[in-house]
Length: 381
Ligand SMILES: Nc1nc2c(ncn2[C@@H]2O[C@H](COP(=O)(O)OP(=O)(O)O)[C@@H](O)[C@H]2O)c(=O)[nH]1
Ligand SMILES: [Mg+2]
Image (cartoon, rainbow, N blue to C red):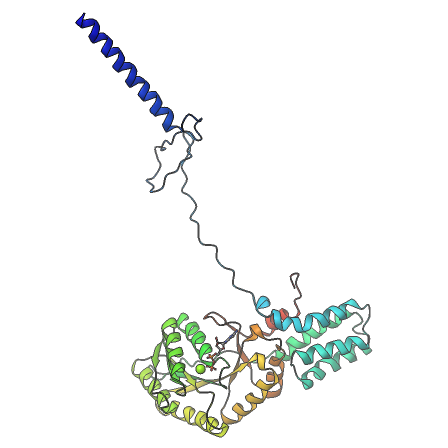
């Protein structure tokens, strides 16, 4: 009897445990649903991972998941940046190409577009007259040929200038090159210095930024931020102090620390214009008083001001020996033609162009690329 009871209890226990195992198994594979995936089974050679790889066919060779780099944001091309400058031409070019022949309207359209782009009257005539002669001689007969010839002539006008930034590396250590940045207030001097500093430290030169705009405290702070970003040394003076003494101190410090290049910021506004120009002459003199040599004086011009920028440029050129122009804000300007006016009427090469507000938005001026971007109507305009 006792043995029968024992068997009965044993049978019940076995049944209950057996049922429990079946239910548990069914739950694990999805509450009665057919399993969505085969059970995971690490392949013998699978490296340790910290994340689960759920889908593994038996005997699948485990491959390392591809390293997913963040999608690089494509830098805007020069063509994109010059959309506004190009738009000055696209309408006129469209009308010109829309006619089957070269007519009086063609010349009107061309002249208007060139003037709206601010190339200036002199340059517009100098570009159009030879084209008219070639059309009269039937050397050019089609509208498309005319635009090709114009493009080639525009590039030709800008050809031949030395646009390299002058850096003399034959100087003894302790004798820095000095690049001065001049121009009216708000054109982008300080921003350009930050961008140039970054380019120069990137190519391996040591750089010091001297905050010669003592007119506003914010100007020195702004420059200091750029110095930090571009890994450059920084020298400032007291607000309202003498700009020349800041530049002098900067050159002294650069000399003592064997820094290759001093970028000198200057004020763009003083009580009178005569003051400003005298100030710049003094800054330049003082920059060379110690061990430094000014190898570039870059005049910064805001491209959105068009012909006004040209008038400013004339004054600066008279006050100081300008060796190159930096044309800023070309990204937001319809007046890209100002490049031609600057080069033709002032004879100063445009060396750099600013195409945005961030540290990488400064590019060397290459005539073929610039003119090409103005003419390239592409597909997405
Ligand atoms: N869009 C655009 N803005 C620029 C460029 N260069 C400078 N700026 C802006 O112009 C303003 C004045 O620049 P800043 O460097 O302070 O001029 P500064 O007074 O001559 O030193 C700032 O808001 C800059 O971000 C450029 O190439 N493109
Ligand atoms: Mg400034």
